[in-house]
Picture 1 (cartoon, rainbow, N blue to C red):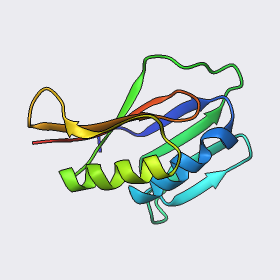
Picture 2: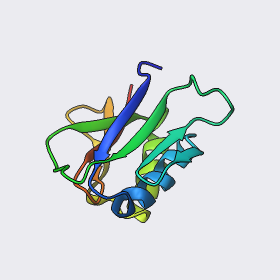
Picture 3: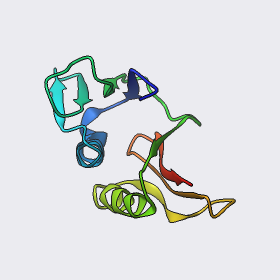
Picture 4: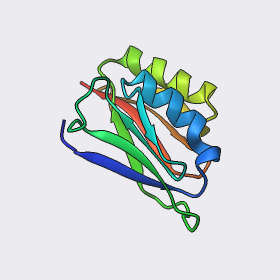
Length: 123
């Protein structure tokens, strides 16, 4: 894994929580630690030294051009995870397809706060 953790700012956990609960659990981040203002999603197991994905409440947060791309293991995983994201309320959804090359297959979407997300597979 190339990162330790991600702290993504959101204006309201209630607006975005359903998408991240569904998507991150499907990616193996099923252990949840929350305190009412912040939520951290950990990989399964007891090792707190593992990478995690956190949602941090910031009422002043506003959308920007930053995008977080999750890497999928296969094209089928892109399709599966994109379907989960769409069913969980992803907005600005762009269905999976080849982008620029048959070696880059991706789906693009946003959470309810306008944070840009992507699921991709590279060959």
